[in-house]
Length: 175
Image 1 (cartoon, rainbow, N blue to C red):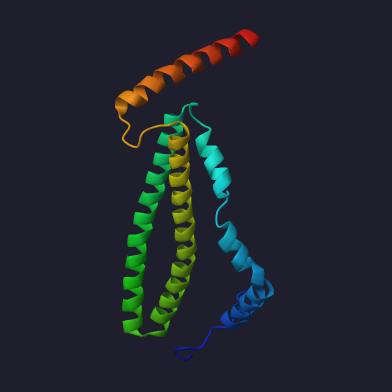
Image 2: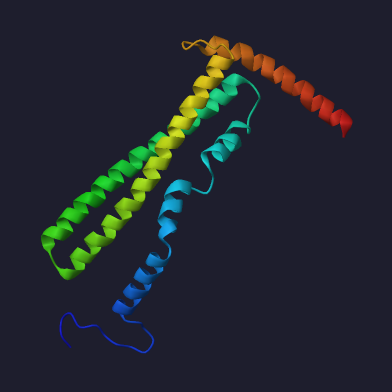
């Protein structure tokens, strides 16, 4: 058997056959890549915002706090993916320098992964912007100063807890 010769087995399809099937499949679904790029995630930005903005409390500071938490989570995820991508780029460089058939295959596979990660990054950036805009809209709508402090937060926190206590009491009476 030669070095680059494929082993034929009745149970295993040839790599070329698999490759041609995959290419045929991707050619038959040209809109898939576009729709994946547009949808990107399980939930739309609007759905993500509604889900995260309605879970706790009903005061503007609660919503602003949730926006801040979402921004923080997305930013940390972006930092993580940034370094992961740098490591992958380093590996690609090393594989290409090595120049063997297998190392070049690994480099190609890693490049595809980097392209897909790029779509995830653009979605995360859009979500961060969405939460920043929501934060600003809430702050402006409720006349909250840009330099609000903990005393401002605690004052409204007290009012929100009293409202919530009344709401829960009425709900229990109606049960």
